[in-house]
Amino acid sequence: MAEIGKDINKAKQLLQEGQLVAIPTETVYGLAANALNARAVTQIFKAKNRPEFDPLIIHVPSIDSVLRYAENFPAIARKLAEAFWPGPLTILLERKKIIPDLVTSGLATVGIRCPDHPLTRELLNELDFPLAAPSANPFGYISPTTPAHVHEQLGSKISYILDGGPCEVGIESTIVGFESGQGIVLRRGGLKIEDIERVIGKVNLAINASSNPKAPGQLHSHYAPRKKLLIGDLAVLTKEHAHRNPGVLAFQQDYKFHFQEILSHSGDIDEAARNLFSALRKLDNSPCDFIIAEYVPDTGLGKAINDRLKRAAH
Ligand code: TXA
Ligand code: MG
Image 1 (cartoon, helix red, strand yellow):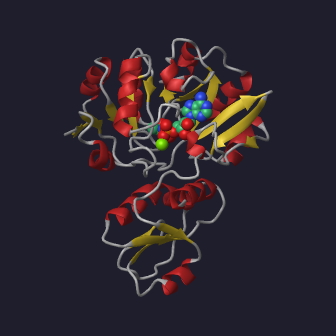
Image 2 (cartoon, rainbow, N blue to C red; image 1 turned 60 degrees about the horizontal axis):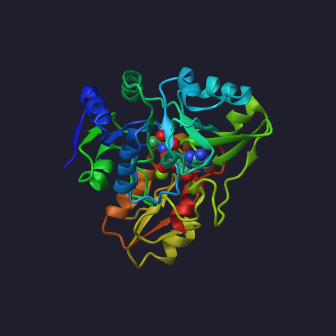
């Protein structure tokens, strides 16, 4: 079983040997391997049971390393990175051949992110390769925001989980690509679109699912608990299902149910984002029979939360 600890040297050594290590970031925990080593990267797909058509993003220590892995760094992309890195932003750039096909699933672009977590930044600084890392959950399931979440599901498949405490943001990075000098958001996430637009102007949204998604974070069903999840007006749903055994996922209000998670007692959206995945997980692991939930206010990170709720319910 995986050991949980704070030993950066151990993490470094395992990664250099081509092994997998779970790493903390400000968004969610990642399942990391040497992105330049296709054999190591294969282990990520195996451990997550992830289809190989779903590309991985790579994590770098700084803006300076981007051009080692990308053919070019357009001004608009650089502006975004300068404004928000380290942080919950992944940018899609034309990939250099040094990045194995497997990482990008053969796409011409590679997703690059500089995460904002002191342990992982220190680790990245010590490595001479970037880390490919998807969220450290089985494919399609709820993303992990604590070392215990990772251990619960991938503990038997990896040897080390670097413990950086609970994730501060709680939902994945926002993914931005670029076409004809304009930004295109492929996944809503921890960086708000309003903030992006303040730096590079109006962006296009390409976040809706299709049968051939450009980013499988766009798949209809994702982030999903094992239990059935219904979303609606909780004032109604709690009455309708009162005689059954639901778990309640509420934004702010206390519905006085035995199995209940409240995302933010004070109605703070950022706090709700931070608590979302662990609340879903707690209900999924509780003895409730199914989960009823409500959307959060559709402002700021609320849009990214609601996007995940919708996919989790699909
Ligand atoms: O916050 C995050 O981004 C976390 C932490 C660990 O950094 N990582 C993460 O990775 O969420 P993952 O693999 O769970 O989600 C990355 C998404 C996937 O939906 C993938 O399809 C998409 O990014 N993606 C990766 N490379 C892409 C590319 N070149 N073009 C379009 N989409 C891409
Ligand atoms: Mg994921």
